[in-house]
Image (cartoon, rainbow, N blue to C red; front, side):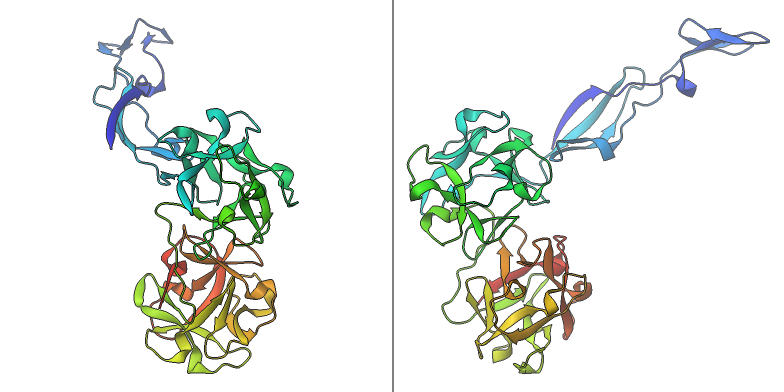
Length: 359
């Protein structure tokens, strides 16, 4: 943290400047506070510091505001590192190439392109809690899908942040794609698959090609085994997602249980479908496709519906539902006890929703 000073505005005692009073009334005085028998200095109150509002563009924060001299109107405070530090979006197959805003501009509609990575603000991005991607040099501008159109080839641009789905993105930690919050089957893509300087960034059907795979430092990625993987609970990595009683029947319950090497804890990742490894005709399923908080996660016949498709968010380490991207797989009550139920809940970035995929 770094210390700075800034005016906080000292206030006069009682919230007003000094008044001169007589037996019947008071009137503005000369910077002193009068009583009927004496005059006192009109010392200002402490500079007002409200840390609830000491935030810049939702990213930069200030803490520990205080004042040492209440009359000079200045407050000291500490500048804290952003809660959401910036990162670069590098092409995974060639990490010398980065996504940037064209010509370091921040105008409405500024184009987004690929260029050689440099240590410059035009290539720094902040991955914010509402799934928006902000330009670090102007946190009021977000990565935006032009007119919310999902048509292949629609341009990606900068636009005023507005909290719309056109500005929500999820970094898929298993495929390394950046998926659109409007539709998880649409991904950031390089036009015509080109990786040259100035290559345009657009939206396209997710296809797993190198022109759709990105590297974000600090994100969690999973190198999936071709066969089976376990899903560990980050809060207690000795606990895993488990099929209760190892019974692969429709409606079989999914729970948390201490990790072991029996079939009930092994899963096969087939794209965004999570199959039960011992019987790959069965999939991890959102019961009746409901998105109410508390909806059960179960095993069911694989059917290709969105109720059985999940995105592993590499920035939050959570599994988001294709049915609704703001809903996540959740450990009930964040408990680490064996037999704790696995359910759907609003995505909230708590440890109840954080998992690691490994063998």
